[in-house]
Length: 427
Image (cartoon, rainbow, N blue to C red):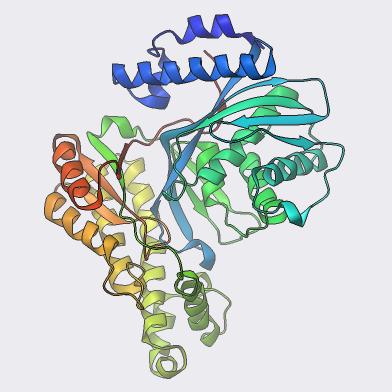
């Protein structure tokens, strides 16, 4: 444990090497982050009355390659971003976890009862309880602690605030009670398990893994019970680009059928070919079977199968490009993925509301501004919400000004891929 006074001295103006890894090199941004940690430590001391603490940070994540490939046992490419959730935490020598998140009342989890409680589904407390239960089941030590959390991963931004929170809790328990022995991929698996079983929401593994591992990662879900996770050694901050996520707004209500149609239609093509998911067939299989499948599954399902096969293969090429330092070719494949999502996967706007096409409009503006100079694509599920763009730093002001002129001030988040996942800060 560290005394708050010592941590304040170590953080200083935020210009230490760890802070630059997490938040970049801009002096004003580093100072702002330093002030953020100092304020949270002061709040912790006021709320919980102790000055011996540890500091934690857990990033949000962005999907970069493989749009709607995971549910077909495909490949994805994702990255941790510099928007994060941070925590000040300390053991409290009890059986109670107490957490105070900024803007919310404190909640508590009693570790003497780790049973699933469906009445608590969709609450932060259920996630903390589920993570604790799973870690105990796996043989890790758990115990009571106090924590103050401040979050900068915006909800509904497609940056996965819930997964970031989950692996933050995993990191806290790992370091406070287990000497940091919890492996990042294990941490991700625990978070996913808690979300599925205690929070009541089925989810894949990409979000938690990207937040937990950090940097660029690729995941192969061919065996969904044992996904293969690989971290890539690539320094994004040296590329001369910013990653911009733009929230185009749009109504997410009544999109359940649209989202459900994607895995359903893809699986219908696989079923006609005698398999469960598209990862188990080839593009040649699909083409050969088209005449006999069109009336049964519909043309859109076939186009979505084309998208899966193309994007799944493209992830391999994107990973290879990053590993050899060929960022220009990587960007071309981001654009190709975006066009495939638009033309084949058709998850850019809902078919029952063609008047509202915020994502289409944002992509058109990005194409106008970045053609031959950057990359742009739909981000995440699609139909409404966010787009992603890799923007040269000399165009960043123009790009943001143009997109925010249309979608509103503060709708563009200028980010970078940070190399660290969910960690305890060693200052």
